[in-house]
Image 1 (spheres, one colour):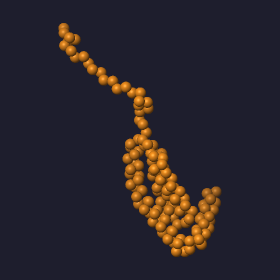
Image 2 (image 1 turned 60 degrees about the vertical axis):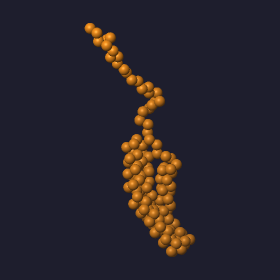
Image 3 (image 1 turned 90 degrees about the vertical axis):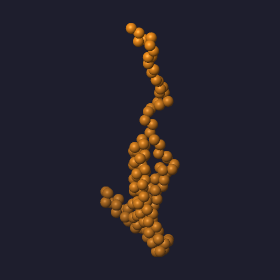
Image 4 (image 1 turned 45 degrees about the vertical axis):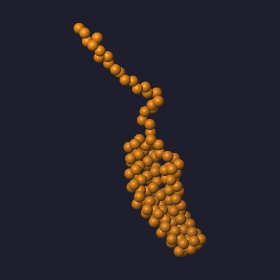
Length: 136
């Protein structure tokens, strides 16, 4: 079943690429392939910076699932942009749009460690050390 989906995906990618080449021409499609591969390589080159800042956020009480989505989205988008083909480039752009959405629209917020933090009353106990209590 997986082999069938893989085969259909490769055939679809091939036909879409041929259609894209007929629209843009040979040189236009060649520039497109190199431009998306370069963009994917640059994303992959700077992904470790994003992961480093994401790990700092995780230790600052950010949800691990959100960090995983954001960091792996960069890797997935860059890998799809590096692969030549129209469908893989489109899926890479969708993955990159998802990462941008997570980064700027759905802001990653820290988790509050104390539930009901507003209900906490800070109390200080002062002991009476006057001389009256120490008389024998």
